[in-house]
Length: 405
Ligand code: ADP
Image (cartoon, rainbow, N blue to C red; front, side):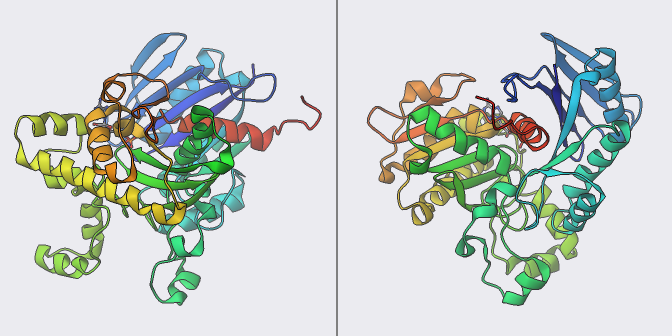
């Protein structure tokens, strides 16, 4: 059965999944095989975990870094006779600037362009590029696609994507808001009409992707019309270890007080701020909720600040949407942290939102509506970024034929 291999390279991990295609050139719902190679930056600590045929396989990685990990993945797939079925590879790429609005077949010109956008996303694009280059070496006969996190936000109107800075900074240097988590928000946008039984064109929803990185997307019809991340994934909401919005006037003051340069400050705002910085104990929402419950003041403040800023930002999307009919939660926190959903929706009562406490507390991996009867929909939708990448890759290289029913 032809399959699509999805590769998602992060700074210290590689997630991958293998999705079969169906007869009608769709991607099957379930991955045939999926896994994660982790701790790739720690010498001798690399670890590979794969789920295949109902079993979990674990192995230590003998070679450091991304190249060794991808090689081990490919070897394992080959041993299980899965490699010969792969017909294309889809890669997640974080930043496509204003050049890439669609899934794109990778060639050397595309690689050069993605490299150019590394300037915009120095933490992400170089590592995505590494993954692509290694995969092209290991699997030279397969077509490979880049699926961009920024692409879904290509429909933002000018008022949503401009910063109030000199126009030349935009034209000359690409300074504008791009937005991220696009593949996840697009999946949510496609899921909402089916879940609540409305026409896609009538959707006026806010999608809240809350993982370690957190972002909102205002969805009008099928399109993104505003989003909370900007030129980089540092803008917007309070996140695991990222500050989100700040007064830009703080940079000079902090660089001076901390005696650090602007590069180091940016690094600290990415890695030492957010829930981690405010709580003083870490960025794991499970631990923070427990600590807040047992009276830890830092954890309580971090959770309260997270919810307050989130609710305030959701409410602001009344402006691009005109009305908000649906809020959809996704990502590790959005899908699992019932107390966070409860606190955010409580703050949004003014817009008519109310939860059914029992539905909110029930654990499930199914998409569901947890709103109180008669109140606007509040959805929990497990995101499926790898599946989306597989589908987009399949459609790029093997478009459904026009005569197919
Ligand atoms: P990433 O952005 O790295 O993909 P995830 O989407 O996996 O991250 O989300 C990670 C976050 O989800 C962490 O803050 C984690 O604590 C939180 N999380 C996962 N499960 C739960 C849970 N049951 N309750 C509260 N938070 C959870």
